[in-house]
Length: 352
Image 1 (spheres, rainbow, N blue to C red):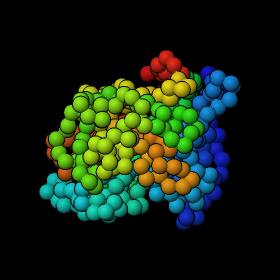
Image 2 (cartoon, rainbow, N blue to C red):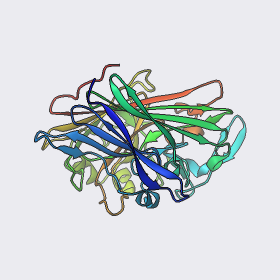
Image 3 (cartoon, one colour):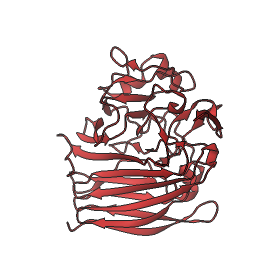
Image 4 (cartoon, rainbow, N blue to C red):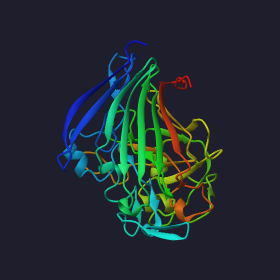
């Protein structure tokens, strides 16, 4: 279909001097996305508006230097392990692996020098029905303490409907653990708060956590709690539930109905009722971490946007009762998440 395009542009240099590039994907209806090779970062995701303009839906920064100084994983692909691993350690096949801690005693999003700090190799992709960019990264054995040489591939693609898909693949040469996600911060109004947004999640259970955001253990029901999402986020953020107060908002993993799915199904729907704008997140993953930007720093405000991080569960390497995040050489890691936009009615669905 005409109107789909992918272009590459220089975007400065990483702290070590490696060139960084910005890949821009465009669809004929006015949707666009920009992806940086630094952190495989989604820097921009614009949707068309009724007045023939466009609206930015994710938080982004203007330079590599700003991203290198950012503590919030803004728009990055995080890994090797998204979310937290308690006390920076896990045992796999009888061997203990100690990781680099960066969240108190715990390891968060792969450690202090995770995938969000790396420059990925990239190449453009153009098919009859989509424009995309393929990114590649080699994470060596021992990287941040994780075992195995890990080859990671991430493809961002934008189709003619304006659906943004993120496809992850990985392979290892020895047993390891893996949990990748996209850490974009979403706001459907270009406003300084998502308090007037509404969020629903396709989940009846969530992971209650301790004061350091480590799961307490078994899944807990959302019914009768503020985690039974469906109304305005502002109401949830103002709730006095101890778990919300301790986190400064939402920073919780929800167990999606049905667990791991062979094909993407709806995980969450974010809407902006004043305008009717809507974002649906579809995924093959068993969980989604909802994070309301509780610790965002300048130039952004607290609760400026919300992350909808599709993933496996936090601390799964230490929790055999959770869906496994172990990857072995004879296996392949694969995951798909889609972001579908609309106004009023449900967003259009992409052709499989």
